[in-house]
Length: 202
Image (cartoon, rainbow, N blue to C red; front, top):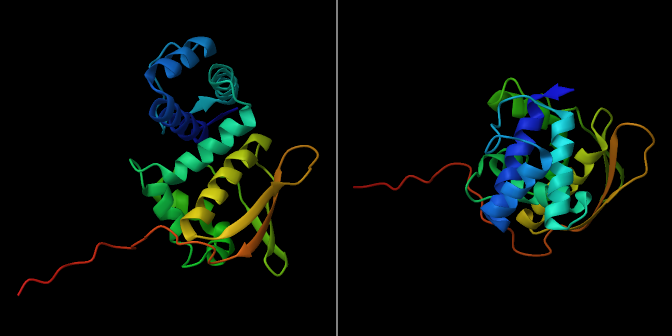
């Protein structure tokens, strides 16, 4: 399977490893994965098999389980100071973490406004009890769930919310996450401004 989405993940993984661990580990990963280039272009389509080769190579070189690498990747996507676009796209969902969760079903459409060729699987959110949500991605690869956990935890920190996020067992394809929002204002969140404030000169 070839999808543009893999290009985004591979480029994000490249940035995560290079920024956090340096150029040498990234070179080792590419060699172990059998990839001859220096890196990946985010908008080019790459094969799922290559994505898994690079992921497994990253796990081996960094000596971390693949699931941990994917969760760290999700956190990096939100917190990467060199590219604030994903964080801004996510923060447009609302002024609180609960508002953000309630807007996640709109994310695939919002992402396509910025990147028309991107194919993000649909996501479904259900509030099963007060402060307890389930987020399901019926068409997603299971590994995407770990990236989502990293993204959702990083966004909780961004909003200053206290949450517990777990993956629920699911047979076959698809991802279901359990999200429990324990405290919306647990800590001070990161500052976020929708647009730069203009300073009047008079």
